[in-house]
Length: 430
Image 1 (tube, one colour):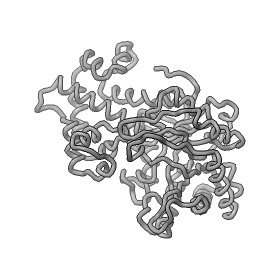
Image 2 (cartoon, rainbow, N blue to C red):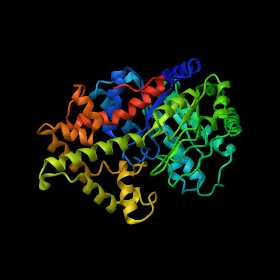
Image 3 (cartoon, rainbow, N blue to C red):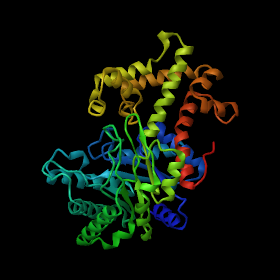
Image 4 (cartoon, one colour):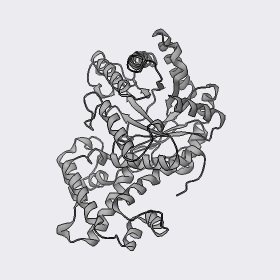
């Protein structure tokens, strides 16, 4: 994929340049990302995770082909050029089937890779780091690399069969933070050591050679490591450059590879910029975007309560809480504590388990009613100032229309602007 190989080359010339991946399937998040990238004339990298999208539908109900079509339709609707759009697959491996024996889980993973590549995904994160039912814990680098090479071979074959040649790029690595943030309260975080990163690379290089994939190695553009950033339900572990200095220097010997940093959500603007400059040049962001979506919707619901009689209100917050209580499978293994602590976590946790519930019919109906209630008459400026102060400033300057939809999109774009600026080595601008 020419955009990504060119990006790595650019970063090697000027370490201020990075790229960020939007890891979300929510249509409002993707719309915000497309509109921002269109106005910025920038490439947009959108990634689907193996638990979101798989050959059986994942939790979104979409196969890779479905997701590709969904994103392309959004791009057409919002006039975003397809030649500036890159689709990536994240955590592709046996992650979804860890409760099964390794032989069975890897058969599923084989088909997962085929379905992603055949659908047109070009950035492939090979992640076989998780132990299956009959595996040792943790897996050795050798086992992880052998399984990754097996999947890479299938990916190459599929791409050649479907498109005549392979233009895939790959990310490898085993020290992957838990998708969507840590499940437990964090106090400290171990940074990947340079030796561990070298061992991972050596194991993968050998495994790829054994599969006859020597020619593929220059298209491995990223290595996933832990630079010391993470978040849990209520706190963020910020990037501390001094702890990852040796690791950062280690990748400088590679001409075609940078580090990929997961769970960078909620880092400060300065920290994101430092990460890029220290060669953690592929930044992943997901929950922070749906967290911003939820913030905007809760703020609009508060405005609605001020403007509408109770019987006309959407009750979005109450509907959401009711649905999450009736269907606790997406949060009950992640949130712990008293009843009040659980209530706060369901609504406000940085890990944002709310994102699993937006497609629910009752919640979607409440959302539609909320937007409809606030679209009929102008929203008073004092209420925008109270509940959405960042958007208030733009409304006052004539830069933003004070519609529910416009306010939501701009609030999500606050996060996107931070990442975009960090990847250009500049400060955030409106």
